[in-house]
Image (tube, rainbow, N blue to C red; front, top):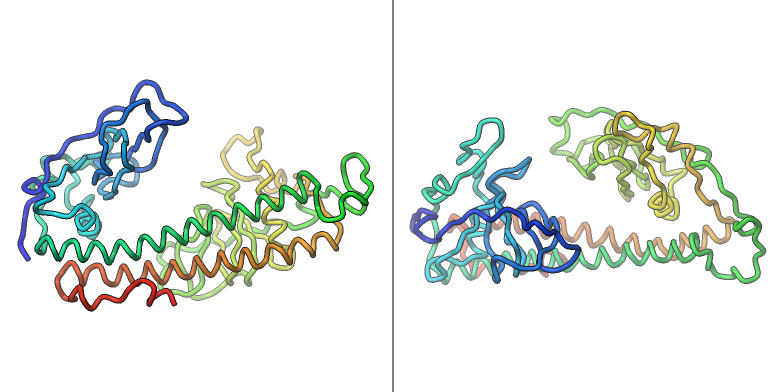
Length: 362
């Protein structure tokens, strides 16, 4: 293990201002936070290691940009000396460091400069060990990414089936069901409030959102854990403040906080969860961004006949159960990876003794 300054193993440049013409397709424009559009040309052919230099909320984050990307001036691009350091190893290694806390030179807004970053010193093992460590940790991330793609495909399949049955009205047996005013016989448009009232979440201090087993839901998703549940399993969570109209289905007992509404399990279903994705929760009359409950309750939801509703639920339930299984598997993989990472970086753990991701996921 040796200590090196980052400037001795890489050259550094700030990215460039975004191109004047932003396209819907082409080469990705990567800000360090996300792909913000596309360009006619790229600045870097390879997938470059970057450190977010400034911006809101992500200064100090370490990312690997997409291949053939235009990288903007919110990031510092590290062009590594491959004879000394492995790119993916350094990605994991720097990810351990609280770069924002250690290198911030900004006042009103956090900022990291090339000068500060280039003088930052880290410990690194020999190149062969770096590659072994990166390969093992990368295997965990690859499996997590594969599961995430599977989850996205499963969710998309459920959404497509919902649209087929309840938007295009091509549900099984639709040919023999008469319709009036575009609504099949036995079906009815009802206000959301009459079907499934929105309940207010409960305030919970950030200090109480840790060290529990119950997921805590805010408008951005799971924002911690708590030791007590507010709602039983099967609740639908709807963003009220912040990420207005965001939707989550909790297959486990959960604690929705005061930035969300929730629909109790007795009224919730996978069909209703998918139906809510069809609604526009943003009222043009709202002076302050937020989801007005009276407005939301007035939105119409198509209620099918009981037999069609039950048939749909039977079809999509296994899909969502598989999504939950993959989500839980990813949580185990991420936990195992995060436990391994500091031990590998410090040399406490021999690379040859690292468990494979498949062994953890089982």
